[in-house]
Image (tube, rainbow, N blue to C red; front, side):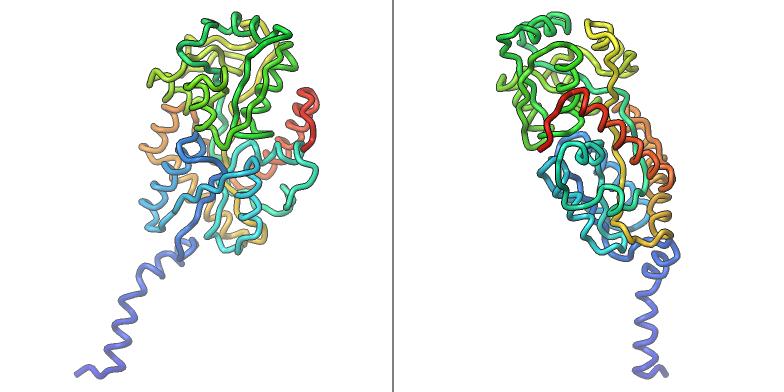
Amino acid sequence: MLNRRDILAISSLALLPVAVTRAQQGLPAKPIRLLVPFSAGGSPDLLARVIAQQITKQSDISVVIDNRLGANGIIASEATSLATPDGTTLLFSTGSHTINPSIYKKLPYDTLRDFAPVTLVTIAPALTLVVSPSFPAKNFRDFLTMARAKDTKISFGSPGLGNTLHLAGELLNSMGGTHMLHVPYKGAAPALNAVISGEVSATFLSTTAAIIAIKGGQVRPLAVTSANRIASLPDVPTIAESGVPGFDYNGGWMGVFAPARTPKELVQRLSVEFNRAMQASEVRDRMLAWDSKPLGTTPEEFSRFVQEDIEKFARIVKVAQVPMQ
């Protein structure tokens, strides 16, 4: 006959499988908060949610999206840099992470020292310049003519100061001789809504967001920012072929970071888990439909990429003559 001690021992064993499985996996036993620096409905948010759902499915570990808006991603980045380095707080960031050092005189963290790169999720081939269906310019050349006028009323919205979408417009001003007024919003979705309502003339969208908005009849595409046309929008010309030779600007990247001091073994394990999620057929198909080819790198490869991207955007910021904030 079992005594009370035996019963308690057996009861405690019943709780072990999940904890042991997770320990064997080398993943956090607690839910993971994935901080997304931009608003719900934007491209980073959409992609982060698809990947988070897959990780939850494949690992039995809850991954919760936490939208931490503000200051071009600085708020979410700072929260990550200060988080306990146990893998339960991660950052799903974009090119803004490597732009900020060239835009802001003082950041509350060190972009290289205070983060542990986990994996590079994707590099989008281009951004798409869109206007409302009723906008008078029917193609990019007409838009360019309007935007080059000294007294132009053309404006473009973006998710704030210093992000990838903002710099695309400033680079067009610099290389194309346009005089577009930049209007910052608190996210890509509000900037898109401003175009739809006529509050601003145009905005640059990620391929993901552009395809959704175009199919929904909300916007009309004028041009893409890459050197060559992209497969998902083959009928949309490039800015380079439509009046601004040499214009070549990709659609930005997305990647995952952990706080610095996160054990190297845990960073490696998280990288494997995120990369495995991106190769799941439903995630991969969704990403390809959005023209976001799943990459998945080692932490070391992503670390080198981040360093090179900081240097690249320092040059772009200088060419675009964006003032320091």
